[in-house]
Length: 94
Image (cartoon, helix red, strand yellow):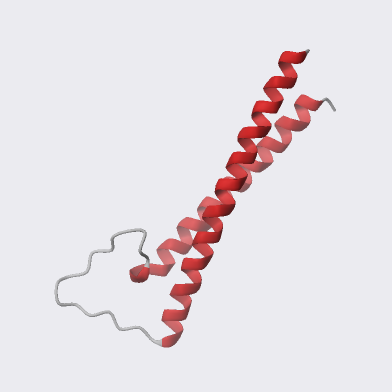
């Protein structure tokens, strides 16, 4: 297996993991619901949000999971970009 094919293979793996992390991030953000500060969730005027302790804790956990998944997506995305660059560089060297 050449260096180029290794770089390409790992870049594809990182790209796939990036997509998976973004899906987890999106699901966690939607699951966090009303408490998510990232997106605007329309609430009719005069409406109060009442949550049980379990719902509140689930929402906070979903927020944290979304943040971690977003960081993982950025790291894997950058890794895929670096590996793609190295693959092209290895191809030019030949």
